[in-house]
Length: 109
Length: 496
View 1 (spheres, each protein chain N blue to C red):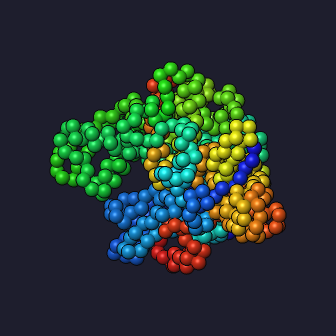
View 2 (view 1 turned 45 degrees about the vertical axis):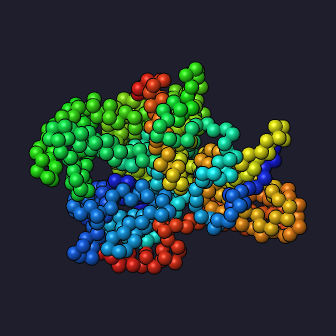
């Protein structure tokens, strides 16, 4: 497996100032395109149900649901302290959906 | 002079402790006679004075009162404007630290060097801002220590707790769960997981909504129409929350500031616990995440110890008891144990093995020769939970022919998916022309004891290299020069 260095500015075809925190989730960016093939959870949209947001399907086995929710919690809990304000905003909605799914499939605490 | 001093710079409360000659830590009260100081700053409009603590909290002018500034320590753009002057989160925190230093040094002696605690999930920027705040307040930061680590040090010292410990630290603004091995004075951290915006103040906000709903139902009017009144009701809900940790039911009366009548609030513990259930479920997720990170089961944990005022909520205790099958340990002064532990840590830091709280790496196009697929990924160089201080190197290849500048993005975060990590810095290195793609570049990350990261890039062919510490830009981040200037200004301020 080769690992080829790829900075964001080269990926996006523009230059950004060095050492400046910035969004890594710009719509339409190369990042979006690269990741389009394997979405783990749907983009946060108000019209979507918690199941859709968390990528939970009706026939999914319990252990798979559990693993999916754990992965999503780890991802969006981290995103809640991201430097990207948009991602931070999405994270809270996703965390709510993840909690709802846990309570639905595994009961309340 | 106080030799070993620890400060818990909290979201809602801050405290300072020092190590007495007998080796035991003690909380030093502020000049208002309080053991802990509210992390609130009030900018008076009549006199050139900054009030810090309960006087600031009760001041009554919301536009001039700053609450919970700690929540913005990791926001490079956050600024607070008062009378046309813009204050960074580090400066506001410096006012709180100045109050602690000035008040407490009258009792325990001059304070020049301190250990300051931070949430385990504080990122690079927040840690840097905390160090800057202390410097502005005239104190050198000997070490930053994670809050749960400090608390564990205190539990080991005062309660003789040993074995494999899970620290559940639910404070005013954040939740941290840390798993560590304790054997006397020797402590080894295994993992720390944190959640931002998950603490007592979130429960207060939820109760405030319940109050407003009941008020609307009974009077048909809104409970508050401005920030000043909202703050007053919020204090009432905080009091009700505390009472519900002792009583099954609380009765309260509230009125708005428009003479719309009085409403009687009837609140049971059961109802309160239902209201905060979703937040508590998040805490369970985080505990499970910590166990998974350390590859442990609940039965592997010898003791669960409680830290932070919100662990007084009975449901928190019963939830953890159900999960681990044992009663969690509480030292009683759960609000003070972080500061007390920090003072102990100031002396014992060499016997405590900490770990990296986040993964650090770079963005790389990873090519899988088997599947012939390539994908832009977060390529981790230092994985989370690596014992610190540490240094790790990974070798990458350049992507283009005749590449003149090598750019390395420094990422923070565990996710493989580049969308879900932060790019916290970039290092650029000029390299000779006319080289084919595929030249080897070694990227080394070093992580120090204060959880600060440095990056070194070496172009193997030319031998050229460059090293940087991560620096942030943003309206809320001060340059070194500005930091010095504002430190000087701050030391001349009247802070009460």
